[in-house]
Structures are given as structure tokens and as C-alpha cells.
Length: 190
Image 1 (cartoon, rainbow, N blue to C red):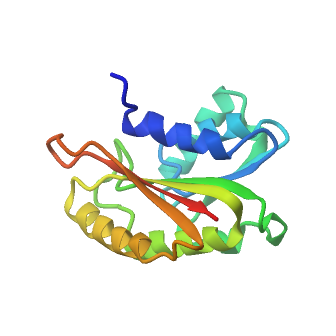
Image 2: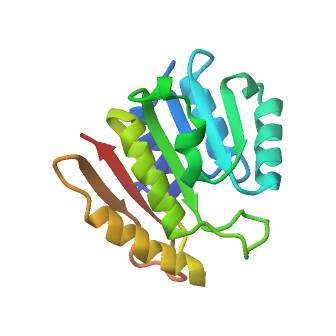
Image 3: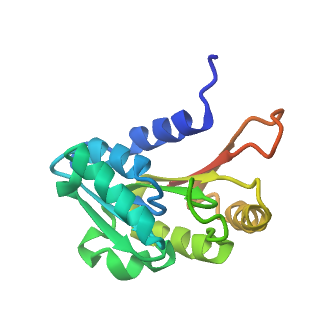
């Protein structure tokens, strides 16, 4: 297949914005895959801030980072991404180059604990304040469950309302797949 799948395309977008020595955010650590990816992108001179409301996700992410020898440049917070502004130091303002969200529930975890539109929108607003020019936010939207549909609609209404003079907003996804395939919304700060 010539077209990139959702997760590879999310990583392509992140890699286009985040490099050696940069600062990045994983707003939903989950099982640690994106945190590890970002840690490798920023290298030993950069830093990643990771957030998750589930202690199991923080533990899984911590383990993944340790076994891949990438723990030294990551700070993990057992907290909602809606609170990221309270945790990321003020000295980082304007220096964050990329952020990623995987919306929905923790794969293999409790499916009743899900991300919600209001906290995701709050986190996006905070990141847009903290990020530098040409920084990218990548949201992978999983909407195959009831709350996922609600969050999808809230997030989509919000991103469609963003000022095109301040940000570019892209939607990427396969439209002929069954069972509510995930899709990407990417926001680039202008």
C-alpha cells in the first residue's frame, strides 16, 4: 500500500516537527509507544513530558522507556492532559515542537475510562499557548465507542472553529473502511 496508515502518518507528522534537542508532549501515554517514539526523536538533549490519568499507563510507559534506555529525557505525570499547563515549566513556553494524543481508552485497559472532549480541548488550548511557531499537535481519534463519538464531535467542532490565521488544521483518514476507523486531526501553529 502506498498510502500511509493512520499511526505511521501520525509519526511522519511528528517527525516533521520534532527533532534532536526539542521538547515534545505525549498527552495520553497509554502503553508508551508514542512516548518512546518522541524520546528517540528529541534525543539526549531534548525532553518529553508525558501525561496519563491511569497509573497502569504511567507504569507501562515507564517500563517501555527503561527497557529501551530512553528514560533519562522523559518526565511522566500521573495527571490529566487538561492540567499540562500546571506541570510543564514556564521556561518551556515557545519551545514545544510537537504533541500527540491517542483519544479513546487504554488498549487492554478499562474501557470505561476514556478521554473526554472538554479535557482534550483544554489541553489543545494550553498547548497552542505553549508551543512555538510551526509546532504540530497530532490527534489520533478513535471513535468506535459511545464516548468516542461524543468526543469526536466536540473536538471536531472546536478545531473547525480555530482561526486559520493562527493555525492550519488537517484531517486524514480512510473513509471507506468499516467499524469507525480512527482518523487524524493535525494542528500546525502558524
